[in-house]
Image 1 (cartoon, helix red, strand yellow):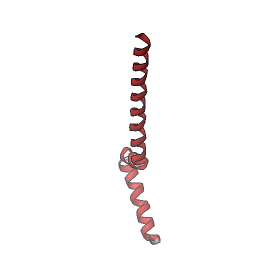
Image 2 (cartoon, helix red, strand yellow):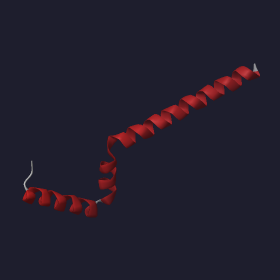
Image 3 (cartoon, one colour):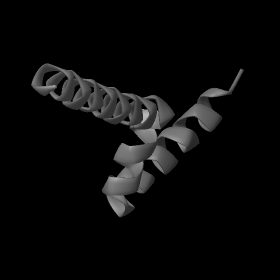
Image 4 (tube, helix red, strand yellow):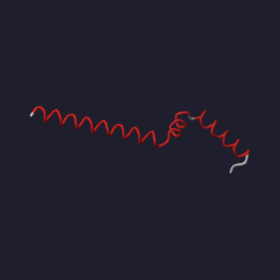
Length: 61
């Protein structure tokens, strides 16, 4: 457990970090889950597009 002084120092560091590099702070706050979610969504869309192309090709044959 952090002492009150350590907690305050940590809050000060977090504020400084957000102010000095907001884009990086935002990316880190989102964490790897957001990245994985985007990758999953892109992969799912690719699979669905491929399935649609195959289905259309089968219909035209």
